[in-house]
Image 1 (tube, rainbow, N blue to C red):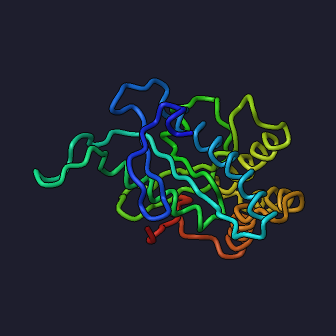
Image 2: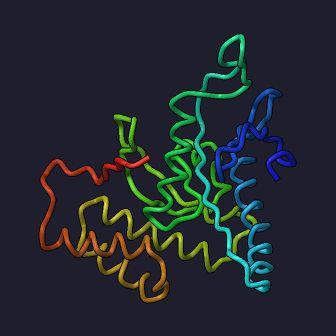
Image 3: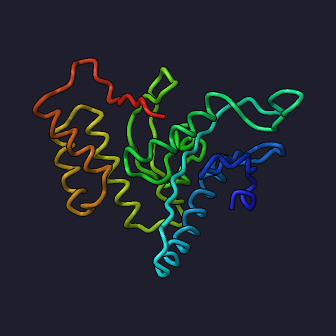
Length: 222
C-alpha cells in the first residue's frame, strides 16, 4: 500500500514499518498520500483480522503516526555502513505520535502540520494539545478518521460534534464541555478519547487549573 501510493519503505524496526514520501523521487501531495496509505493499510488489515479470528489465531493490531515537515535526507552513517534514510526532529515526532495512540486508544494520529497540508480532504477529530518528549513547544494532534469523499455521514457528524465539545474544553467552558462530551459518550460508550475529555471537564468544573492553563498535556513517554 505504501509503494502503491508513492511512498518509500525505509526500514522495519521490530514490529514497526517506517516509511516516507517525496524521496528519492519527488512526490506531489505527499501528506495526503501518507494519510491515504494509513486508511487503506488498516482497511486491508481488518480483513486479515477477521480471518485470524475465524482461525482462532491472535489478532494483530496496528497504530500509525504521521507528521509532515523538513528532514535530513541522504546516505547517513560511516564509510563502513551507509544507509539512505531520513532523520531529524520531524521524523522523531512521527514516531512519538504512533506511540501516543496507546494513551488515547486511537489508531491513526497525525500532526497539525499534516492536517493543514491536506486542506479539507481529511475527516478528523482533535485529540489533544500535547508536549511530547524531545519538543519544547506543544502541538495539536488529531485522529484521522477517514477521507472526505469516502467517509459515512455518521462518522463525519461524530467528528463535528467532538470538535464543538473540544472547542468548549479549550475555551475553559468546562461545564458546556462536560454536557457535550456526556452526550457523545451516550452515543459512543466505548470511545476512550471521549471519556478522557469528559473526565477532565468534570474535574476542572470542581478544581479549575491555574490561570496560565493552555489546554496542553505533557507526555514524557516515547
